[in-house]
Image (cartoon, rainbow, N blue to C red; front, side, top):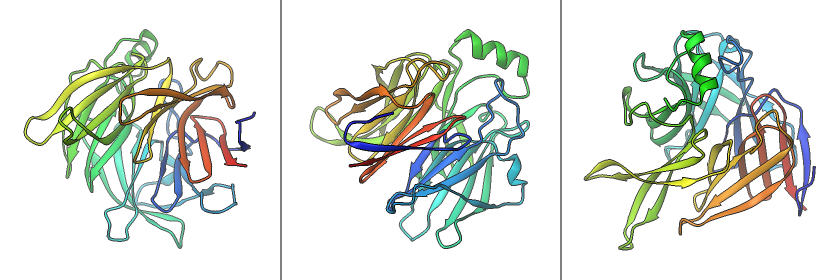
Length: 313
């Protein structure tokens, strides 16, 4: 495995499906995801942390202090949110035994510990949570990649293998949640908010949602006066999964030939001029679902396999 200008090391893990990085370079990743109908929870899932400001490339498992058994944590999407008061909040979408939920934690740097604060549960709106994107504390967007929940295993199995577009996008504010779209998204798997400018040079916010099985990203304008408005779509290659936002550009990443294909990895950058550029297209590691970078390091995560860490030479 080679990436020009970088030295890469494959770290043995049980997946690093989704990655989120704090402003200080602490990379949090969900591991051990069991995704119904392909796998069955409960799972020995967890969260790992890698300090990207050091030369130590060994991810540390984060201790979880929660009233529920941490071995039944089946984590999918993860987002770090820093409210500006010194706290590091971590939100995780968790596939439960019968009810998906978003878990809220506060991270202790000195203890390498996540302390559980709250669970957001919605029977009508949360049924196949994949990813989340924070707006403010307890204020976030979420996507359901499928329509049928883990409680409807046979129908979920048929839906997964049929490529029917029944995914949805929703919004939560302080526990009040509602769907923002119909059940018509093509397996939405990643989302991010960016600030850009309109045709008049005015700043505006956009929500970008990857629709993995529709081979596209859908763009929505977040307008204070008009609310949530669909704008347009951007074509993407097959099996693009998650989004990384470094504050300047958007990066889409995935394995075009799927988790059972070869080791081809693609990372596509979307700049503020809405120009798409493939910045990585090479054989690195099989089944990539996530990409992230910080200073001289690049991370490539997978759902059920290892983590690849590349350091600039």
